[in-house]
Length: 263
Ligand SMILES: NC(=O)c1ccc[n+]([C@@H]2O[C@H](COP(=O)([O-])OP(=O)(O)OC[C@H]3O[C@@H](n4cnc5c(N)ncnc54)[C@H](OP(=O)(O)O)[C@@H]3O)[C@@H](O)[C@H]2O)c1
Image 1 (tube, rainbow, N blue to C red):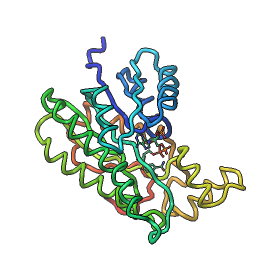
Image 2 (cartoon, rainbow, N blue to C red; image 1 turned 90 degrees about the vertical axis):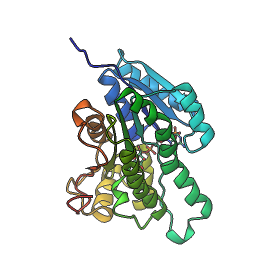
Image 3 (spheres, helix red, strand yellow; image 1 turned 120 degrees about the horizontal axis):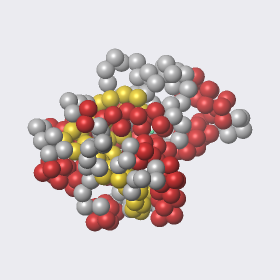
């Protein structure tokens, strides 16, 4: 008999890519899952795809822009408590360093950093009261290897490490853990567009993938893009009961791209 408590998991930015794969993994485990994105149709469609693979889980779709305080309020009003919060929503796009405007810097920090700060501030106190909870920030290997083609993105990903470490210290001893997961280059719709921009869209994608890894991520030991399901596996572990001694940590699923031995 399975006596494990049924948990509610919220994954921000889960209409595609890594976020959707994380939702699907938790749904298959029998958790109740909240899917989120900015657009109601895209959010409903992702929830429907996940529901089809996990008919016994409750899958809710909540459209809300987590880069704004109002959007976060829409989400927290709809879903007041969760057991697992995965701060995954994020944006990235190549832009020469000297061309990044103030507005873009602010948009990147609001989307990639403040969203997770606001949601952790809302959900972690309830987790602490109940004596169990998991907060996972999806950062990136770009937190450590500042990408020269998008320093604003890299800066937000580095900041997430400090934010997560700080929150982990704030919840110490309560049964709640806070960690970051650092994926390396992963095959998602966002990255398909990014790679087409970097190496051209006039060649088959397999060739573009090979060239991108060889030319722009040459330290990859995996030698290919990571698959979203491979990132989801680590997130699923970090959010499990078995990961109770892992907190305040930065965990890599980067295919060996980072050549440092620890982040
Ligand atoms: N793919 C990689 O190589 C890679 C590597 C390292 C780290 N990461 C990190 O992993 C996360 C997911 O990346 P991905 O490649 O899966 O991205 P993606 O394919 O571009 O998907 C991004 C998701 O975020 C949502 N989103 C964007 N802005 C949002 C907002 N303001 N409010 C709510 N949802 C929002 C999008 O939904 P809608 O468009 O439907 O709103 C979409 O579901 C990001 O934090 C990224 O930095 C990715």
